[in-house]
Image 1 (cartoon, rainbow over the protein chains, first blue to last red):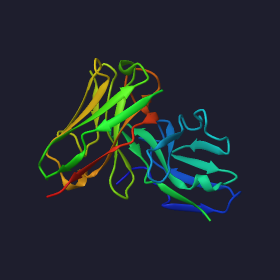
Image 2: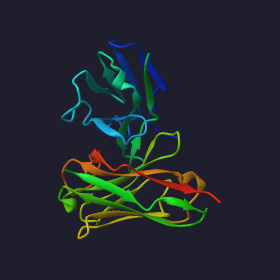
Image 3: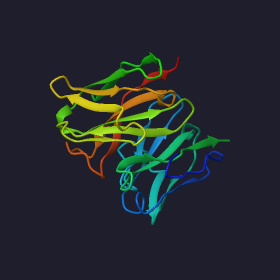
Image 4: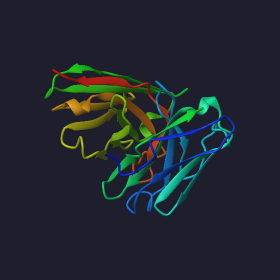
Amino acid sequence: QSVLTQPPSASGTPGQRVTISCSGSSSNIGTNTVNWYQQLPGTAPKLLFYSNNQRPSGVPDRFSGSKSGTSASLAISGLQSEDEADYYCAAWDDSLNGYVFGTGTKVTVL
Amino acid sequence: EVQLLESGGGLVQPGGSLRLSCAASGFTFSSYAMSWVRQAPGKGLEWVSAISGSGGSTYYADSVKGRFTISRDNSKNTLYLQMNSLRAEDTAVYYCAKDNPPTSLFYSGSYPGDYWGQGTLVTVSS
């Protein structure tokens, strides 16, 4: 049972904007930076954002990340079919002294 | 080109042991912390363990503490995960990952970064 909570699903039509929330607490998101991962079906996770809103090279700029207080969010603008995947937030948790992933959100492109 | 190749997965009975390996190439292995992350069938990601570049510092999720041991052989560019007292709930695909940022230390700012292996399946069942 993860300490970072995400909605189980999100969806949109091509071109729409989709936002995924990640709710944590003072021991994780409130104190440490948030990272986001994308996992396409049947593949290993891929780093999508680090340090809240830093995009690794190769990640399209229609993806954006933000953090406020004990929550974070990932936004996908101009949704494309290839964005259909599972998305996970993650952060270090000072209380658990470990790295924790969110519960994951499945994005469906309608 | 950075490559991470896991091996050692398979079917094991409850209470049994298994050792996973992750062969790394394409980067200076000893300069990076490394992590193991697992994913149970149809479930989300779970961080399992991490180790500093020197191997001197190790970290574990509470769910595996006391049963799993992470280690590395920098002369062989290989990461290991020794798994003992295996339980059905340990059934998962196990991924190794190269940690960021580029430091041999592992600390609260470390995280599984932009290179992951393809995963190896561990099934614990009688």
